Amino acid sequence: MRLVTWIRAGAMAAGLVAIATAAPAQNASVDLISGPFGTGSYVLANALEQISKAKATDVQINSTETPGLVFNANKLNKEPDAKKNTIMAFTAGINYLATNGEPPFKETLPSAMLIANYNLGVVWLATFDETLKTPQDLVGKRIALGRPPQILWTIEPRLIIRHGWGLEDKIDIETLGTKEAADALLNGHVDAAIIGGYVDPGTGKFLPSPQTVELLASGRTLHHIPWGEKAVADTIAAGVSISPITVKPGSVDGLDIPVPAFFDAVAWMAYPELDEELAYKVTKTIIDNVGSFAEYHSLGKLMSAEALTSGWSADRIHPGALRAYREAGLVK
Image: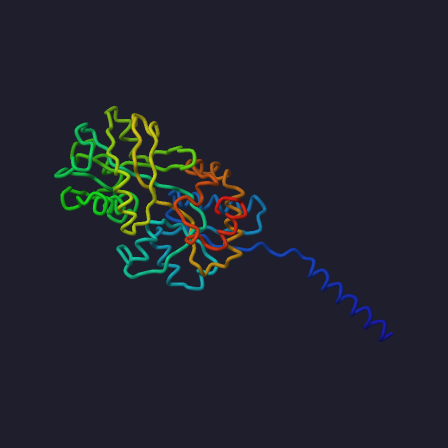
């Protein structure tokens, strides 16, 4: 009897081991810190979370609202362990400021690496004064940009004016805010203002920002002042992380000339400490479902497989993400 009991116990234990071995492993989990409620960064991060759950992928993404993209980098660099399991909403331009320790950062931070672009922001200057056509025409004039901390709408344009035009001390630059800049132009308080929107570089499809739509709807003829290819190239040569792009005629109403401009890649990024396999799984989920983002936000309509890595060299892409892009034939 005792022998039989031991045999039965051994068989049961073996069965339990077999069941445990056969049980499916739980999906990997990754945290995503996004941006303030209502922003494109917040909505598209939530979209990525929903896609990871609805499409039965092998990674589950948990999105969390944050005060902003600068906050994201500061948070992860204060919590090193979180870097192993967290991606963040960020931009190439903010990464440039962080790695150079420039305001709003108080210290030099390590460089983050690309997981995937979800937005490409493009800006340039516009005016109602048809005599203002070139950078030199703006000498002694007033131009309105966004709020001082805004990378795309203020900091990068100022860097173009400094490095590309060499006119920072000859133009009266007012940092008002995007809507306020448009209002100032409409009211005649400034001579030119920042406008722009978001683009898919593959198709050239363009989605104007709200204040750009407001200016276009004014019924007045808007004239466009390009940054210029050389000015953009000179600014990039100075180390600023922007990428050249030409806004096609017809991208906005009344635009009948190509506008040499730049874009800042708004992206999901991570530090090198992020587990390589997690980076691979997240990136593969994005690639495989890139067309689904259009169901969640108008900016999602500008997302495409080709745009996911626009503006990034292979050495700036997280190794796990790079593996996914190479498997998909999107990066050599």
